[in-house]
Image 1 (cartoon, rainbow, N blue to C red):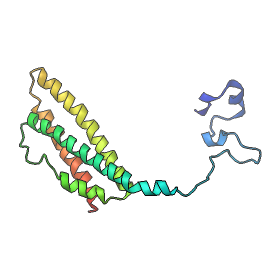
Image 2: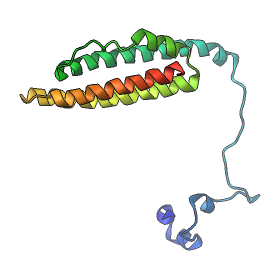
Image 3: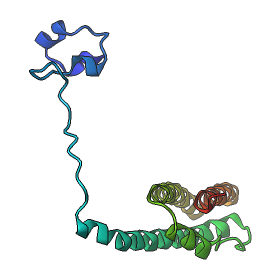
Image 4: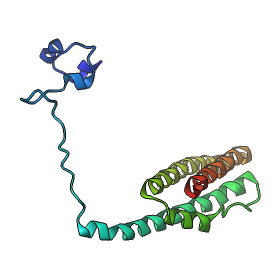
Length: 161
């Protein structure tokens, strides 16, 4: 119900079945108030900084990729599985993100953040279970498999397959 933010007097003016945009105040010309569409060309300084920012983003994502694989090594050890796929294409990923368009780089960055969130929570839980003297191998294997599938998906997105 949209009347939650309206005062008692305003509630009687607007039927509850209207969408939120239908109860928005209108300006004196009858049009809804909206943001200006005053778009401008970027300054020369902003255009010149674009390659520098792209290089910084690539370096940052490469470091996050490597840090995630370091954490994955701990998960693999708790899962008692071989660490053979721990590198999982680090150089390949760095090369692919360097050439990625901006929209794809943002998607890859968001994907890395998602994997990091899952790995942080999962590794914390696994270490807690291990500290209590219980065997975390089954849960660690599930987290390891999820990590590998997520990394494969990011590599596929980055590679234009």
